[in-house]
Length: 555
Ligand code: OOB
Image (tube, rainbow, N blue to C red; front, side, top):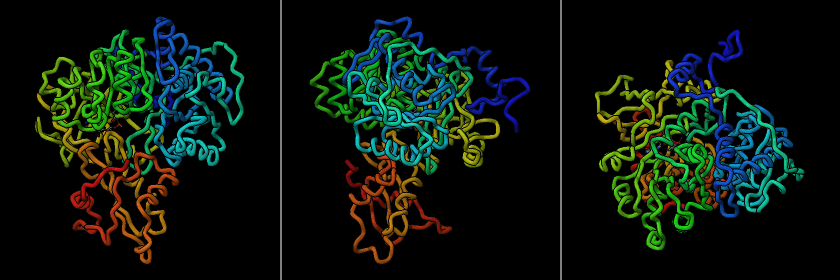
């Protein structure tokens, strides 16, 4: 089917929405025609002297952020970045991340948001799938990240490497393009205005397939979710938001996140690392008012002696999501940290739910919130695809003004992830209360949720199978008190390799060398002689989950 009509406008938007749906969302006033650059530009113009971002080394006002964006844009243009160019961004948390992303939006280019933990295997896939023209990575810094940059240079000569060190005071003066330092004059870079219906960026899916899928989000759809999140979470211009999770993740970006803060011209404090010591002292020092965490980090904060050592009285709201939060931990937030909890159940594909600031405590601690938009359509279906009775558990399907209706260039996955009428199958098993609040009760997808980080077992299995001593492998999630789930690999050694089977350290090193993301490396390795089987002879992962001995998770 051709996707262009006789006129210029595509019949289907990059996020898979038909033009008629787009028209309706616009008529309803949900989509406003704003682009991501408009959002940056407004804050820079309206609040030039207000502090925009603080990281370990630098504090930038909005005016200075705007200048940094121009410098970044000059470097990116030298790398051949133009309107519509996909650019893979893989940077440690820092103000440089904001400058890079702001610059890409100003140039009308398309960021592809890799996480620092992604390995060369994943990043190579992002480069290929997006037709990236450039890769922005760190110039110095974590060894693993530098190895990814090397692999991109080696395997993707068509991708121009841009390297920037976030730890120096003038990062763009020292940045390199294909190894050469670029001359960066203090000059404003002209804006490239793009259609609000165009592809704004590619976000990454939590894994269910061997390699992450690319999620195409448009300016209109994403910024609607940002504005709604700002309203539901009451983000104000005088707020100071702590960023402890990876900047590029959808939660950090937009729920309400970095873009929510920029939308109102608030201050973003980027923590050097997510540990309680670093973050709790940052809250004290910068009078932080809001922060977002995954459940294991919340536990680490709650159980840290640093809570007593710092003044946390500025903290108003804590957003916790990405994985199921226990009622017990949820109940401790108010009394022990002195702030309001908002649970967040979201997904990079779209749908976002929050408990509301004025919800009764019981709903806040026992549910994962309700959708941000009255135009979010939810269907909860049983195994036969029929709607369950109210309150009963079933698989959640959703469609709406900011939920994609297809992945980028993945026709086969699309056929099983979306219904013909455009509903996304979340793979989450949920119940819905009469109030509209959702309780996540389980999962119907082959994925491990390791404290918010999503791992496709298949990705880990593929790499382990490449080891000469391994005959067969099966990777499952097993319960863990802190992470919710951790990764366990069951291995059957090859004949003749039982005696000299590699150690855990060797296996981990092997996986990292093959470019597997750091968060996907198993916590536990068990060698066995055979796998339990289901009735039809398939490996029974269900039995394997039950077999696992709860040992410590990897460091
Ligand atoms: C967020 O996004 P993703 O794309 O990394 O993962 C989405 C999946 C959901 O389908 C669900 O399986 C799980 O993560 N999830 C939760 C949850 N929040 C996400 N499961 C239980 N309870 C929760 N509160 O993880 C994400 C995106 C935006 C905001 C927040 C989280």
